Length: 261
Image (cartoon, rainbow, N blue to C red; front, side):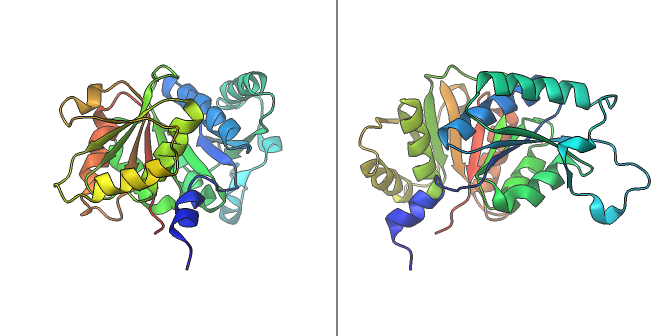
């Protein structure tokens, strides 16, 4: 059996690349920026996926992720995607950034790549939070949803839960440690003690991270650079309405982190 400390550390030490889905628009650019920061923090590469038309002669068996050479410079997605990746390479010269086209929807392509990913990153779609929640529920790795505007880099990491947060607590502490910011702990569930106990255990492994209490009121107006929640195991999981509410209303990036305990 894996020791608790080792199990909790696994979620922050996955060895694969950060994989980001890119769509034109401010949210897509913000997602790529945060994805590049995460790749640099985890000392891994960044793989950018962008949808592209599949030629009519292409077999349906080949509709996976296409190599960069499959791009045609005249395709509508090619120019913005290449420009965005070129900027990332300029801003993060030590990070290996690759661009791939996919004939699948971004959600399906990201899900296909998830087993090899450190995390998945997408732009925020406030009109369809359920789709991102379903992606998070099936991915098996952390999924970050990024709005068009992100907070200042010195903003705190917000850990929110309706019960014991599992690996989300360790993820939040690691993120706060890397950013040099405090964790705002917000328990929005019944007073069972599971949330507070998990926060204390994770904090013990990160003594340099300051823990502050965040009240339930005004949660969406908290000054947070990232909110971290436990990925709901199913739609009837108490964490499902919390996650979909944050994806719809919160102005900061949301990280849904699965519990592998």
